Image (cartoon, rainbow, N blue to C red):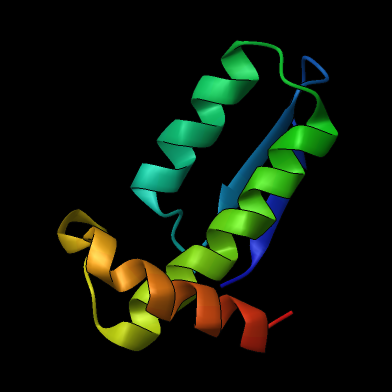
Length: 85
């Protein structure tokens, strides 16, 4: 799950999390566009993209669609995130 960074013609940074097929993850892309539209710094966009990359990897490895994530899954995510640090 790579992160793609593109500098647009207007100089703005576009950051996307790509799935294993190389397609932007729509939910993450929408969130990152939301932050960019509010003039969050490029470093903040990149940091969020990396955090969401770890989160999305957890969801993928657990076979869990993000819509079904519930509080009981949180401890498993924390343990998994620690393993990938």
